[in-house]
Image 1 (tube, rainbow, N blue to C red):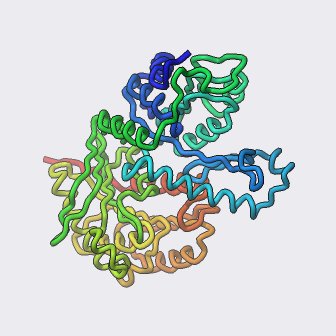
Image 2: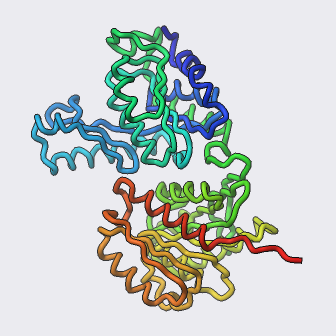
Length: 437
């Protein structure tokens, strides 16, 4: 029925043409689904990304799936298999941990340094080259939903009718080009069904990103750019995103061992963009400085770098008169509070996620900006440190505890909750000054 995946993608794209003009992100299941998804993304003029899932095979029969996992902690289990095989929680956790490590490695190998395309509030179109049982596609749809997609559409060139019916409960719309009653294998419906390599996937993602860089960030009409922030004697790489009609800017300070590519900060930034808040994510240290672990915990140095970045944003957006907020994670939260405490800093609001505000020391007493401390309910040691630090703050402050979250907010739904809290805090306190005269 199909010459190859390219033709299959073009035929599928015709069936999905009604989505053109919507805020769509096309998500290919690696590896074979990506060439199909690329053609769909071309037709819809939409950004392209991969959506990563891994099967959880039983220890003694790896081909037998007891469930599957996706990014952001998403997990779907098969209770019937677990009951029959008799899998205990410890064994399940061991298999899941191993598969999560592999999932992360594959995501980094395919995307490289490119951040995940944000799905918050957008239509996610999940694409594979064919569906037999639908187990992997079901997890992919749930992952897209967990990452904030407002609507999920599943598209595939060939699938069994029963699989599509079963997938209707995880997707808002299911589209199949060919739905044969007798589906032996997906490859039977392709003249050329050769394996897709990692290099091909990476090349297609690169081509798609080059075609629509602003669409890939969900920011049509705005500004998205890799930038260099001057910070005294050094230059620091950054990523600047300014919506078409911003109400404020938020400068991020990442935690120890992280960078501007932090997937959690990238996700929070995507949520802020939906609220018309611009962001700057930048590296607090140069690669050479990171090699010395003392620099990673030098809060005064990090706060100094943050001050340079704040000044750079104000210069770069000269005339916009946008209020500036700070978002800090882990040690970056201490740097954000120290920077906000400086005379003349004029910071409108601060949010700390899983932060160490105690490391800001005496500077806490000089912070006047409204400050929100977001901590996981299961991150008990850090929670106590935040309670003590809040008592030192002189300005307006709140402590928000996300139930069930540990330090990195890896549990399903916890990062979403933290991002929503940050969005609402900044939306409350970042206000464009009224022009007079």
